[in-house]
Every structure is written in structure tokens, then in C-alpha cells.
Image (cartoon, rainbow, N blue to C red; front, side, top):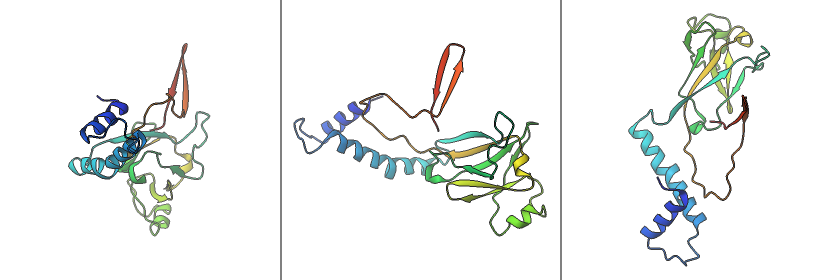
Length: 183
């Protein structure tokens, strides 16, 4: 596997770019490679295999204190969901039952809230901006987890000048500290 620096050197070598040519910078080649990934390579991989890079994230519906994690019933979409869409949503209750959560249009939300349709699922969802709104009877009292399935965005190529990343969570395990990043 090549590092980004080695990949840039390989691209410049294949394109016969002289080493002393200041017009074709490493930043320009990196930008070109990222555009190729975003516009051609990743969409082609998704056409070949619809399940390419599908990941799932478990989202607890209650906090560790037992209070609703999303009292307004708006669950933010994962930051790296490709195209800001989800493949599917499931609900995993505390009795280890797994439910498919149906999409409920805005027109059908009133019927769903009244319990007159979709009786096989405890709740449904629809999209509101960059979030999913959970609809149904007593959504705030649910204590399980949502299982979000989505295609993850590709990583962008970066030349490593420093080694850092945003930290979203810290775990203390014995004498170890673990840093977690967001998917």
C-alpha cells in the first residue's frame, strides 16, 4: 500500500512531470486524486456492488442516566453518510427484538401517530434536514437502540504533515486511554 506522498510521486512519474516543475504542486495532484475518487472511482464501485462500504451505527435512544437522548425525536444523520442518506433504519429493543422501521411520509404522520397504520412497528421516521424525525406513540419512552445502515463517504487523501484527528469520545480502560473518531 502506498502512502499519499508515494502515490503523488508515482502519479508525477507516470505523467512525466519533471521533479523541479513548480506549476504541478503536491497539493494540486492531491486535489486531482480526491476529485477522481469522488466523481469516478467511488460511484463506479457503488454501481458494481450496492453493498460496498455499507456500515451500521448503533445509536442509543437513552443516555446513561436513563433520560431520552433525543427528547425532540430528531436523531442527527451520521456525519459520513454518503449523500446524507440512510439505507435503512432498524430498532433494537432491550428484549433483543429487531424491528424494521418504516419511512412515514409527512401526509401519513397523523395516521401513524393515531396508531391506525403500520401496526407491526413501534414507530416510523421521516427526514427533516440533516436529521431523522422519529414518529409514533411514546417515542420519547423508547429505551433501545437505533441501527442506522448507510454507505460511508470515502476518506479524502491528505499529505501527512502532522498526525492528528478530531476526537469525539474518550474511553478509560484500566490504565489505557482510547480515543474514538466519528464514523
